[in-house]
Length: 473
Ligand code: DUC
Ligand code: ZN
Ligand code: ZN
Image (cartoon, rainbow, N blue to C red; front, side, top):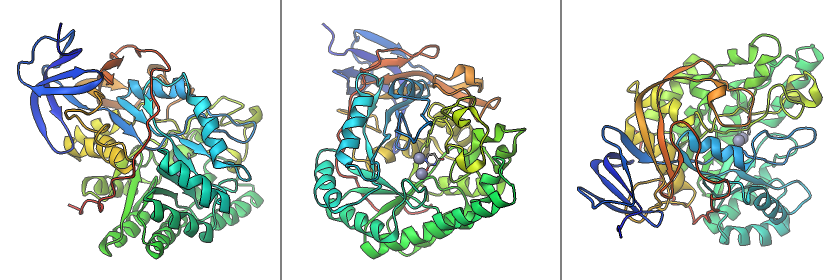
């Protein structure tokens, strides 16, 4: 009887810190050995000539998040996690969102019901705090944090989600007391509302005017304010979906002053520009997300900040709404003014291949940095490391064998989400996962998703591993 359920032979293993050539022995869903010439396993994969990397951890994606009618996200936990696995991601962390006037606990219970029996890969939950009442702050949140929900998102915009500065301070104080990770959506709500009213009055309602309602200063001001609120409370925060230069400058300033500000960016800020919102007719609705993609100069700033260590994590912000869909980009079946288009674009499956091809393949970032941004750091930030986010003895055997030279023209037909478009249609990239393993089981084999929906397990998160952000290189 073999000691190993699976042996991956001749692997070129790359983690955030190292690279080594060895065999990988998997037993009971975990990495049990990293050595040469391991004895035969019950199953064997020959990885000769291929990289074996930790499975991706997508720390920011939205799946089946309850929305105001008639909107409904296209992906549930089954299609969303399937799509993630086919793109090399083995852990997702979507959001259990509190509805104003309701309890946070109820949101978490509801979200578990949505996930149960459906996920193909493992998942944890962030919370979204929209109504920080005394009960939420003093009773619900402290208990939930102890039960393995150790991170939450707060919004500075969106009427149904946003908190005012006093509420944000209350929530940050609680994060400090309990060692939780606060993620902040930083955009100035009043400026957006004012600009939107003026655009509407001028009849400027096409999708491309979404960008005019959110000039960069809207993100810059809110980023600055979020940093100040974090400094006042003396607690680290993560600024999510940073889109360009002015927000990056604020974060650099904070780092220069020794403040613990983590930062996230997403594929849409590297591979799309605001021009995509002006596509023919109503097509620009496909790329309406917030913050919106900027321009080529801002893309370069984001690339530089990925390479020099300013960013801690690279996430998809997958927010799946169908285009020709009365529950999606055409609410009620109609082409609507930009402010009623549900915000978000799909990207769970393309996140890793895009960064692998254009980042590692084009020499902008190293393979170690790729692993750090897409797997190791999100696992650390959200209290899942070292179980997730690395290849090490005792870690879950979540791994991706990469076919680094495979040339791919992205098309929606090859993806596995339930959205009817991809914003990256026609893009030519090099590299795609050949095999994705979740706890030692194949969930993607280069042609089909594998494994049973519902095999994915809920993960309780520990306290975040809150080292200071890496010094900028
Ligand atoms: N913006 C968000 O804040 N969340 C989901 C999608 C989006 O565009
Ligand atoms: Zn957001
Ligand atoms: Zn989001």
